Amino acid sequence: MTLARARLNVALYVAAAFGMSAAANGCGTSPSAGSTSAAGYGVPQAGYPSWGERALLALTNAVRLAPLDYRATYAADFSPSLAAVDALAAYPAVGPLRWNLGLNESARAHSRDMADNGCFQHSSCDGTPWNVRIEGYYALSSTLGENIAAGFPGPADPRYAMAMWLCDESGDSCCADGAGCDGHRQNIMQSSYQALGTGYADVASSPYQYYWTQDFGGAFAGEAPPLVDGSHFFYPSGQVTFLANYQDAAPPRSLTLVLDGASVPLTVTLGTAAAGSFTTSSPASSDCRTYYFEAVDASGASWRFPAAGEFRTYGEGTCSLDWAP
Image 1 (cartoon, rainbow, N blue to C red):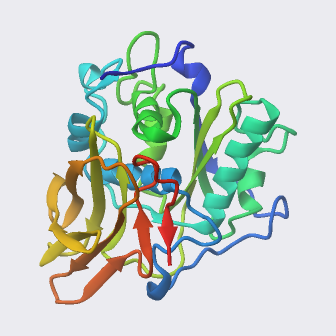
Image 2: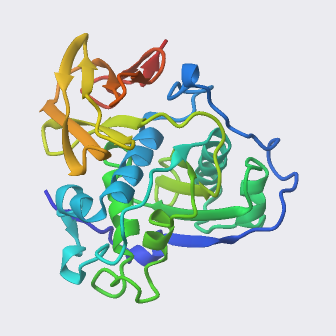
Image 3: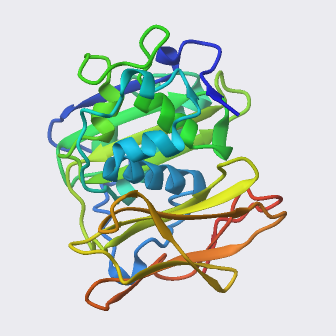
């Protein structure tokens, strides 16, 4: 099945903002450092991130670690074609982004604001500038960026929002690298960003129903394990793919998925074993399955994502759970 753009031009659905913002101020909640210890790494905090937000973070890092591999593997079914203009060819691989609670809160708040109040713009619907809103949640850096997207097909395929941003459609084709219309692509591949929060909202009565936000920051606090992140998503058709991102000075001794208690070896499919995405796929089930990722790095140290508890295969069959302690 081809991922086609929505009926309205994608430029109406997608927007990018980036730049150096002013100093933080008090809009929104208290700014959150969002630091995470190794003992809590990857463990959701008060419902942040949701499954869709975590999946979008993992896909963003998969692009950053291996842009052309991602294009060929997970964006080849998007129309218009990214390959037709050789999109991402001019962007070298960059390091992964680390999840930040404050950026996650900001991104979700903006997606929800757009869905509830019927605007589609970087400024909040009440006119608050986008950088002021982010600074109300995130105070680690004044280097900020944002991508937004809205429309079909919603939470079942976060690849769609990613494909729209990577395409940066101009006319009836994707924007070529460096043509001046590839702002979302620049944000996703910007090496000065170190942290990311993704936000998702679904409101059936809103103009576009499904709203996605990426909020980027120039710094993160806390641990940076080589097992960066991981999630599941529904591709190819009838399959569930489990993906984990890894970056270290050397390849891991092993990287496995523990699915319903059984260890399944993961294979590097994007990038390199020292800096890439490891995956496995299985036929979709009719209900929840449990999973987490385990890695043993080159020095023999063990890493787990999430550090505690288990993810659930939210969206698989009747599964409506994402994580349990």
